[in-house]
Image (tube, rainbow, N blue to C red; front, side, top):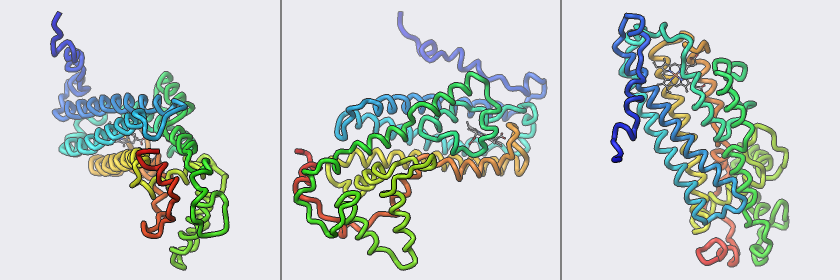
Length: 344
Ligand code: HEM
């Protein structure tokens, strides 16, 4: 039998899935249709984001994923797609904002206690990417509005290895520093060799680049790249942070181009997610002012807290504080340059 457009997309189900409360209560509010459809569109895109992230996570779990393999290419591709979807999700706020506060008041109280707060898919996205329970804003009630099977799913996602944890493991496995042959003809600047001769040199150049008022940055450098006390707050260990910084510094070499794109796509995801949060928060302020949300949180204040706290890849973003000018970069040895070229 020929596949029919309507059957394939199950349009009967989708197009019958808008049931405004205001119509049920015999007080039809025109904008409730928009309100329902926009949330449904978001949830469909959330589903697609989970599909892409789940697949990227499965690939990253493979022990032998290589820096220049098709596998890594696919991971980058899927994450870039997530970034593009998020951009659309940010833009959809424009459509939501065509609804005025008075339009919303026509049906707002009929929805209580339903709220985007109960979007378990949104929380799954955060958890799968790497937001841990301990780092959540409003921990006391973040699952209080959810049904038990959904809570179980989120808790499971928080226990499973997140993308951030897998990224950390992959960065730690980067072979460039563990293979001493890459460094045997390297021209060192300093006499130190801890944690590695390259990083001892880099630390020295970085220290020289600091203005007197920035001297604290050196302590900060040691905390991130040298010391090994990694708490729950830190997503990347010291060796993983070193590998990520190295990728950013020498991303011009062919072997580092894909790894760089990977880091960049994660920064893009974080930026788009936080842009969405920011726009959603301002929209909430515009539509309900300082009233509490239908989900019972403090509304705008809660959303502000989540915005400030829920950056997932902030450890990658902060690496830019430790970059040095290209012309001051240590010159890599010929073996290392070969290793990073196409013909390693
Ligand atoms: C009139 C439009 C909207 C208003 C007034 C609004 C209001 C709120 C408020 C006040 C909260 C905080 C929780 C609460 O107490 O309810 C919230 C959370 C949330 N809303 Fe909306 N919202 C609107 C539209 C949307 C849309 C279109 C989406 C798309 C899915 C959405 C998704 C979410 C999500 C995911 C959260 C949880 C955020 C987090 O925990 O960080 N909202 N919303």
